[in-house]
Image 1 (cartoon, one colour):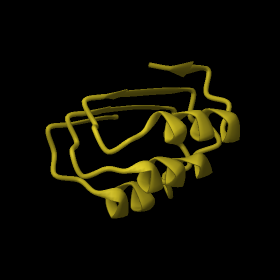
Image 2 (tube, rainbow, N blue to C red; image 1 turned 45 degrees about the horizontal axis):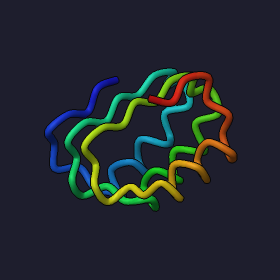
Image 3 (cartoon, rainbow, N blue to C red; image 1 turned 90 degrees about the vertical axis):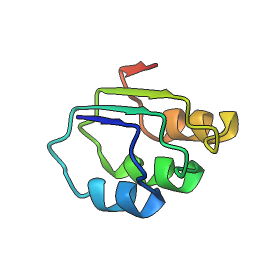
Image 4 (cartoon, rainbow, N blue to C red; image 1 turned 180 degrees about the vertical axis):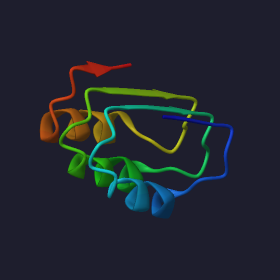
Amino acid sequence: MRLANLEISDRSLIQLARCASLRELIINCCFLITDVGLLALTHLTGLKSLGITQCPKITLYGLKLFQTTLHVWKLV
């Protein structure tokens, strides 16, 4: 699933985290998403690939915490 140039928020990602069958997610240019939304995605235990670019409110700390919580095969 690709989410690009959308005004989605942490709340949107919290809802998306209910999609247990999601395997790949690409998030680009979503300026409202923070570490809170990112960490909600740790419920997606089947997620194999996550791409995040140009989401300035997601911090390096949030990315590291996400990666250690949910071992994604590919984090770009």
